[in-house]
Image (cartoon, rainbow, N blue to C red; front, side):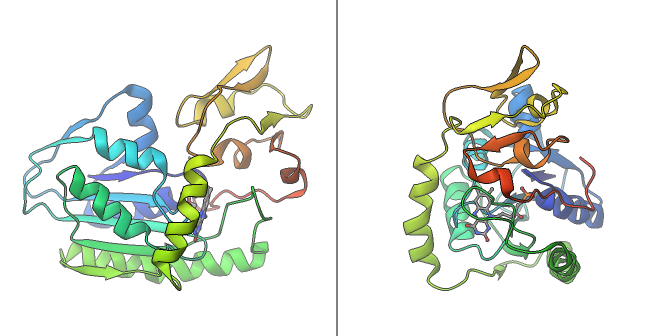
Length: 257
Ligand SMILES: Cc1cc2nc3c(=O)[nH]c(=O)nc-3n(C[C@H](O)[C@H](O)[C@H](O)COP(=O)(O)O)c2cc1C
């Protein structure tokens, strides 16, 4: 059973490939929250996997919350458990943080991998890579996914193939608190380009967007900042503050949601 969270498709693409190679199914963390379903049953010998993007060198808040709610019947000390983080540059200590979250909730981790994918964080910077380079990155991701898939299928233990970058502890320690305290929905808004299609309302993993008089309104509070609403708006009508007006948008081109 492969659980995944994905805002713009990179992690979904990886989860699908891994699940296909293991002949297993994928389960959307966002859908679990929408349907309030957190209890699952593993069949005999079934593996457990978790695929998600790196946020601020750490674990997305929604993934953290999900693990604390997850009940996996038949999960045993011998259940092979893996995780894959997709990231735009490097993961810092995200995998270590995830392992700690799993342990706290009585799960273990046998293997962990990072897969480098195009970066989708457009709140502070523009898309870091031009389209041509993105194609290259996606091509280069294939051998990383294949290697992870091989290790997972062989049930390799203590196998961690990670791109943590320099000073991973320091990067996570200094950046992750910024994520934790800065996820307000306040800067999100829509422009006149909005046609009221309701796509944003459907895709928000926390159900924090509602159409009011044909335009999206964000609930007050903190979201997980997956940026799915901005990147996947078909009219480019969603913005975060003023800076995203001129910035690019990204959705994994190999992934139909
Ligand atoms: C809020 C946020 C924070 C991010 N922080 C990092 C980071 O610390 N390191 C990194 O390499 N990429 C970072 N990224 C980029 C994503 O991890 C990367 O693009 C990922 O593949 C997106 O996955 P998805 O398409 O499944 O949502 C960040 C993206 C977002 C939206």
